[in-house]
Image 1 (cartoon, rainbow, N blue to C red):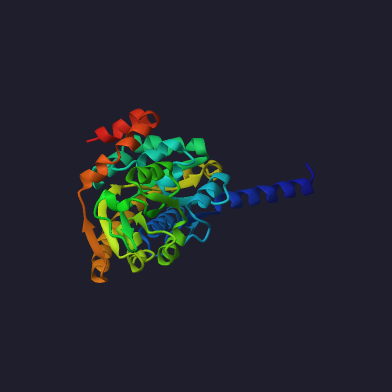
Image 2: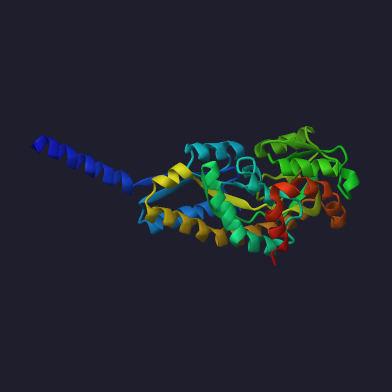
Length: 322
């Protein structure tokens, strides 16, 4: 071996070692920088950097800087973005089994949701994301989803008839709206405020933090909030399969550890924000409406009938989880 060749090989090996050690991951979230899911990703980033002695840096891009939920999911599939936090609802369009979480009234309460997503069923669905070129890392809390409207308060199912309600890109959610007699309007989250303000839509459905001052302040243009808790759709943190496969076994473990370590951080911030948001919108003049939830549940019979074959055993296993 000539001296020149030996030197070239040494430089190449050194460069390869440096590249293997220094890793920058880009993470996307469509919520504002102070939102619990974004702060959860920030906690994940801090854990990763500390655990890797600064070798792994995770840059978090909040506020939809890298695109809306559907766009960022597609970019993660392609490896353009490394990590994304989205609702599991739009993920169902890429990996159908994940859509089961969007089924109306699938979870009895918060405790039931955590029991499912942190148990065998939750792991099964995270692992299944491989089929969509993604790797599931963890679930975040998103509370219960409820209706809120600009001019027509919803006090019963009858009040939903013909209302244009913004929904996520999920066939299950679209079918739920149809069963309730509403007109579903899939719309990017960032467009909801102006759509409510201009009358393009009559209402939307989401949680208190998204509705309140800690989110995008939808209460300013939709003063009627109906506590019907029709869904409790978990958030999810995913990494591109191509990014994940390039990591060493040690770094894969660190990424998983960091994601799981961020879960209680996000959950605690979420619980606090829900309480603060509810109190704030009441003080701001929003009307909080309680309803007969059984009426809404009864209206979901056609939805459960439609998806009985598609989700089958999975659906029943969730309902049976104690």
